Image (cartoon, rainbow, N blue to C red; front, side):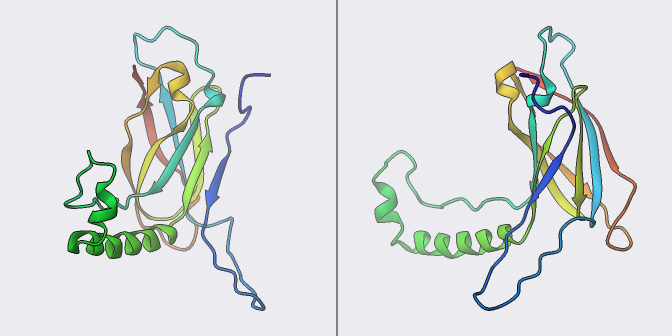
Amino acid sequence: VNDGATEITSSQKLTATFVAGETTTIDIGRGGRPVIGKLTLPADFDKTVVWGRLRLELKTDLPEPFPVGLNQDDPQAFVKWQTTKEGLDYAVVRSEWEARKSEHPQFHASVDRDGTFRIDNVASGTFVLSEWMGLSDFKLAMTPRSIEIPEFEGDYEETPLDLGEIELIGQ
């Protein structure tokens, strides 16, 4: 009962705007290409891992803007800083980043009992694959990795992009 997922699945998070009185169409399903791989344990790891309790995240590689000139050590500094030139510039850049980020899908995937995973319908572009939840339960970690999904002809590529084996890190 506590084995977690019993099959691998993936989901895609999309952003949509709905206007009252208008029809909104969202294309979901067959588009992009599958991405597959297998998580492996470090050679010296001797504990049992319930792979089905792990979840992965794949999201577009859009580096988050950093607030320049903000004193991170002072909890009261943000209120003053946001009215400075740096704070106002950051607000614009952050807003543009949020808009770009919302245009790109984000994926979550379960992991099968043998460590394999599959994420369906990934469009071409640069993404970051990372742990979403579950690894810390087993004192493991995953180094986020940037992956490039190459361009392909048409809307769908049937051949999966195989990331191979990804070794986890013991903590």
